Image (cartoon, rainbow, N blue to C red; front, top):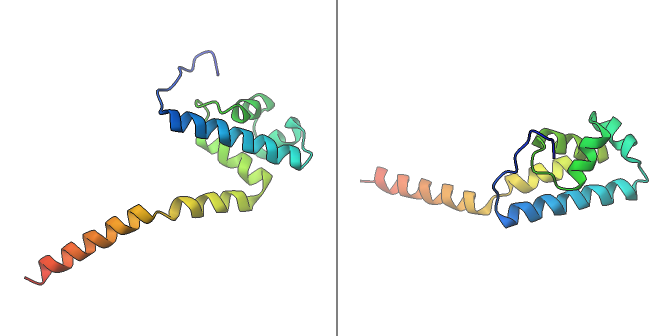
Length: 107
C-alpha cells in the first residue's frame, strides 16, 4: 500500500475477492512463465504495482487490474465483461418493471 493511501472500508467478501483475484493473476503469470518485469511492461505498469495487485491491494485503480488482464490474455478481459453483463437478478428486475409498466398502461 502506498504511504499516503488509507485502507478502504470493505466487506470481508470484497477483501477475499481481491486476494483471490491477485492469486489468480499470479498463477496466470507463472503459468505463462512471465517474470514480474515482463508482465508489468506488457501492462504498462511498474513491477511494484503488479506485485501490489498480486497481493490484492485494494488501493489500486481498477484500470490497472484490467490492463494486466488484457496483457495476460484479451479473452480474460472479455470473459470478465461477459460475467458482469450476465446479471440474472438485474434481468429479472427489468422484466418485472416492464411487466408492471405494461399492466399500468392497460388501464
